[in-house]
Length: 333
Image (cartoon, rainbow, N blue to C red):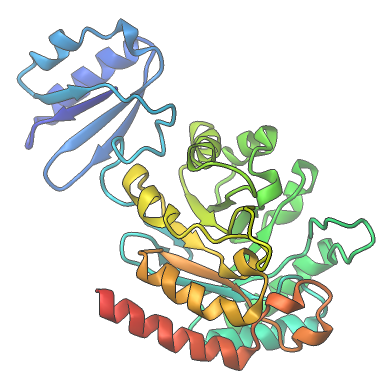
């Protein structure tokens, strides 16, 4: 349920209403906008007498929310969320370029790539230390050593780290990571999502290979309902009948999610296509569709990459793409 307060409501009366609603056993999510305040009521709202609340002189309107997701619902939070990662802002017009290799392979590799993508305009650095692989025989990352190498690259460039967490047991190792990524395979690992609710870090939540937008939002709800509202969503392609690309990039998800939620929306054209030459056009299309950022795989030697070299751009290719992305953003501004 949503209670919209009139503009200029006295603080004392607002506090009294909130205290009364909390006394009914409800959690209150407060969204202060420029012209109105929205109270999002979470819990058993059947106890609330809508007619009584609507009759209050400080209340503009009362609405029931039919969607199962509440905390991440734009109706609860009309203004787009800005997620801060150090000095970097994501969302509400703040666009971010996240770039780096699929997996961290060596200090020389990650530092070289980090310096290159920063020079091209990237503001966050991605790199996998723990890698979920389809085959048990494939390179699965350097794990704790990989995290240490990411920290070295951050010290060299100043770029905040975005890297994937796969297991709750590894969470203590991520204490010095700037953004925790939850991959497609863990999108519905609800125990892990609940645990992230108590983490004071931004979370980049990727859509599952065959999951709906509602399921993605419900996964975000798990994190937010547990206390962490700094969530970013990532469209990374879904499995369809297409046999020429790794996945199918669902660009319609960007404007649809924009209507449904206030959370920032990132697009991953690398995993969506699996083919390096298709990454630039899909990245530009995602930018034009209104994404809040891109996460792109970049490797200094894709042919010899230990993971996903076929979908990785070379540093010079990323630099060329970054220029085009800026041009598209200027065109749609």
